[in-house]
Image 1: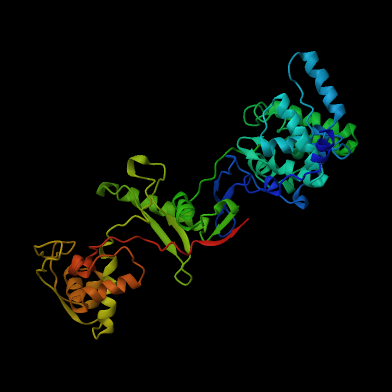
Image 2: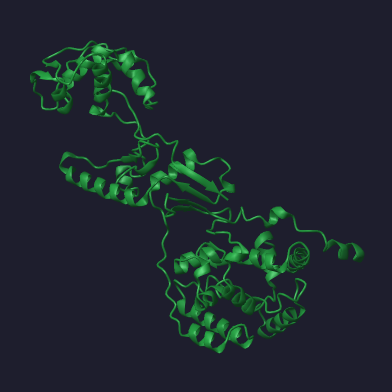
Length: 454
């Protein structure tokens, strides 16, 4: 048994256990890298996986100083720390120190073993195996990318972005020491609720770094006097309808293997469109208009530059979470130019005279009775030129033009243009198709993702 036990510590930790995929969250960004939305990882947190070259030296030193000063010389377990922890626990008659090494904490973050004596023994065994599986620097990298830092963040990059609104590589010594103190007790040292406690922990770490000669007296004085400014806590949820579309319509099913989705959206344009829509809806309040949607597409590439599904995503009384851009709606006069186009190609001109006079249309396969189209102003304008009929969006001339083009030909043209929701036979729509008697959506959704990366 003893030989088998000694041999077992040389069994490598499975590589899938060290994979970052269950830890990292998924970010959807616009074409310029602006974060639109972040989807929590399998551990229900936010995390970004850094390479060793992206970890700031201050943070490495601060972490070792406070968590495991003999990290680079012990085999995964630190007997001195264990004895010290037992003494402190017995003296306090409660658990005040665990004596865990950084290696053991990595194991705990991977396997989530119970805080029991059997669990601690198993954790120690895994730690010895981990030390023989990867290098010390790689173990430290695993720790810094996995360690919980409070408020749903895992790893130093996510914590740095949340608390300081900048990547970890830009952390100062003072900020690095501040972050290094959070994993010890992320709940009680929450910077948003117990800032003074977190700051006290930072001072302790800086003093430890000075005493262990990891920093100079000048570095210490500069850091201890540097004010810590915590960024406002916020959840980024921009362009909500668009990001939902990316998640549920466009993104591949294996999205667990993706950490960043770069889209075609331009958030600057998105904000402008949102403001314009809100202003337009407000101006139409007296007409009982309560909502609106808009899509901005680059015609040359098909890229969606902006997509607003409603004026207020969080307004449940007005179906704010319904994506008006993807919901089928009757387009009204927007389809009239599709009838005029082939009419002009077949011999009509902008000066062709069209009758805007009372006219009866036969019923369709769904309506046995016919109807008489009217204009928006409830007037008839007699003979009008084609250019006037189109510019003024008169209904009767549009129906006359559609009759000449043919409903089936018009329907095929609309389908070729991408209006796939017009999936019924031409007899179902009849000549009223040119007046918007068919439900369509605003955008094609196939060109919204530029790239996906792990």
